[in-house]
Length: 127
Image (cartoon, rainbow, N blue to C red):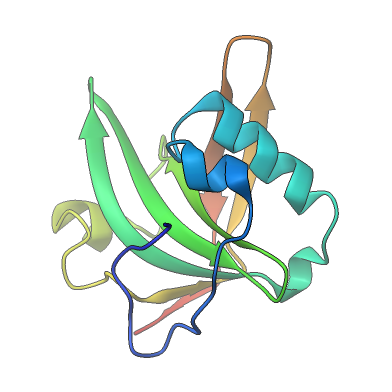
């Protein structure tokens, strides 16, 4: 079951997608399925809620709960440029967990070997 840190303000959502259920959010199969789902919904209705900061093999990333009426998933977002996220990085996400990020923008880089969501910017953080 897809459960993470749940903020009081984040609307509850339930995952019904077996790909999301049975794979890690940082796996290629999960990310490819997320791309498929994102292509079939109105992206203006998506909400993004910070779940956690992570650092593995020298790469820093953030995990977000990404949801709307039709989608309940986790976005594994690679951070190469910490523009507007300096305090999140400095505190390794603590103090911002569960916060909503409005109009989160990211780039998708996909090939036969890997799929990455790369952070670009956001409008604001709502705690």
